[in-house]
Image (cartoon, rainbow, N blue to C red):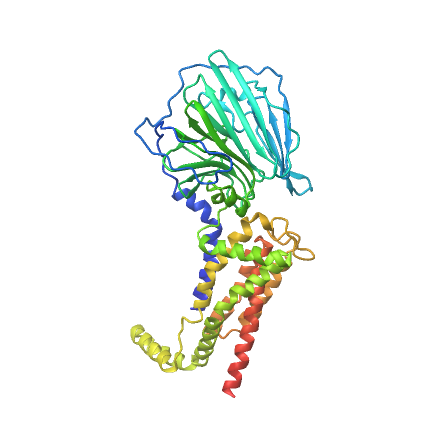
Length: 521
């Protein structure tokens, strides 16, 4: 029974690691057709409510193409404008009236330089097109507002671009504040029918780490739909319930959030990457733009369901309160390693009575081994009778063979939830613990914590009563080795959690063993 439970833990961890990949392979989002053209009211940057779901009407599967052929040659007179606030530096360009980069002042890369989310020069974010060619990517817009340099908390500023031809005018207004990553963009388009606005090519992706998803994400109602970058076999269309489209990596993302109606949203692959865009009617349209860190609390305040970009996984109902408690402990320890230790102790407390009962039961089963061996030998040719006699023996001596497995089963969801919290929370990025552990979100560079953890597992197995025969016990001694290798690449914070949990188990087992000895004396 113990062997099966420990094997279940190993298999569960393997399932956790492969979960995101398998989910996207077997449960791809359903294509959704374009929507009607009923105008929705615009909302301001301060309006933090989520956009209302748009209604679906009967339209063609493929998006309608504009009949008007617009070709715009790049003049080579591009001008850039940098606006800085308390959190970021944004570089705007007159070419396409878009953004070329966002520097995140509070987040550093491995060299100590600020993280910069860069736009692709071929397809920058937020450019306009009459179709998916995004013809206005090379259009030369003129600056119609003052060149703002610096915004502080409480300040507001606007960057206004204009493009004008006979029978065609585009006015773009970017609104920024001094203390937010969110930018409001308003387009006033005349002379076009429906038009497209794109999120650009991989804007928002800074690190293509294989341990988590990176690439496009769509929020449909409250459901997060993610896609592998460059692996969208057929275009995906969204309309009913569509909220926003984003590009994400482990810790950062960019998003395009239409505040009014859209005719449709689309994801497709182009030149080895994935492109996302929304289609809107001509007139006045407003969007929320966000390029920055995946800070859950900050995104909740921004609204529009942006907090769903932080994926806490299947056990999110446990992960979110654990995340909140972890940050609470950090608020007075100022060390996430210490916060993890306190959280481990707190999570352990509810399991103490169950573990005590299980360990006592396993000790009794160990003492019953001679009687159990007699029953197995006596009824070895009658398995059904053997089980009946064993159950009668358990009942007589008031032991439950499953009681030793229950604590492990109950802790698996907590382990999974904490795994996601420690893996994706940007708050733990570059968070030091002590000595050589300088980043609790990364693996231990010297593998010291995993090795110590493996040693504690050996000690724990030696101390724990077992109902297995000697051969099975020798096989189970391989489990610490298996777990040690599994944890070599896990975040140091997760290894710390498991290590502290093992130490607490050893202390509790020692207490139980001493108590049983006194009762037997």
